[in-house]
Image (cartoon, rainbow, N blue to C red):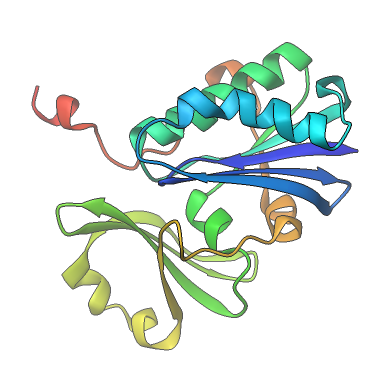
Length: 193
């Protein structure tokens, strides 16, 4: 069974193609705010390179956030559109887990949320120790886990992905039409209303 796995919650856009639980190939691109311009073509190219038809894809797994609002919408809408059009299941997984799944042991993953804040999640293997949340940097430093876990400040150069762990942890989106990324906070525009 072929599966697409994708995340664009940070400057990194990552698209993987798996067969059963094995990664066949993947595509990465680093950019600021233009993932939308490249995602669909990147998926098409990845499939063509591996001689896989879009109709062969039987499920999609998306990194559902937290992270960049624009990036979350790009991966989210692309996944939602493909799942709906192809009539296949859509699954989600935390983007923090997604981007730290390749690290062994206890991991405290952090994505810069600006204004001295970070989206954080704490994991050991596929077990969630602490749910993803928004924290001030100073509060992160006081966490007991800060000194006992691998602290991964996730960015385009600092991530490790293990698709088998992502596949084990994925959660079914019951109704594709109702899928919404996990933003964890309001947009600036919403806060300024």
